Image (cartoon, rainbow over all chains, first blue to last red; front, side):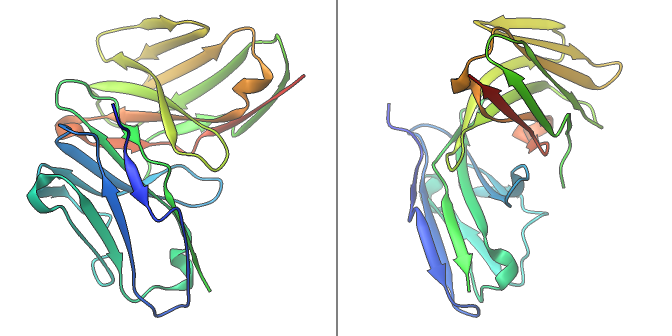
Amino acid sequence: EAGVVQSPRYKIIEKKQPVAFWCNPISGHNTLYWYRQNLGQGPELLIRYENEEAVDDSQLPKDRFSAERLKGVDSTLKIQPAELGDSAVYLCASSSSDRNEAFFGQGTRLTVV
Amino acid sequence: SQQGEEDPQALSIQEGENATMNCSYKTSINNLQWYRQNSGRGLVHLILIRSNEREKHSGRLRVTLDTSKKSSSLLITASRAADTASYFCATHGGYNKLIFGAGTRLAVHP
């Protein structure tokens, strides 16, 4: 079984530039999560999808962040424009409805300079 | 926002010793999960304990859950250098909401 795939692994951009992250969850997993993890801290939930519907985006800074999950499979997370404080690791995870454990991708490390 | 709080924030032990990490949370849960994260890597699921369970074992891992105190503990017995990682508890509430704590950084010295 293939795991959760994220790309890119690393991204360095200048502030005010846009950036996008891509996630391919495990096949058949209807729940998809995007988390942000700052150094030395736990993952912070940004948005959660059930199939193609965003059911929890209360922590997503909607002025600059957007996300979509077309056809309830792959998902993209976008930041426009990026700020210095957005530097972090962005993690994608997925889970199935019958088993609650989440499977994580390797993450995208974003550095905004 | 983070639901769980781990204690201690950091733990340093020798190989062969046991490591105990604690997690406290605030709201009702369906289950509580523990994850491990090696440096620079994604999180890996270790064990899940349901709200109606009090103790669960998996290999060298032992997890307890006290819903009346809203707390859980993870015990790693006979630790190895390879157990060096950060450990996070995560509460699973209604509708698949999975919220993580700040984590415990465990260092196991040979």
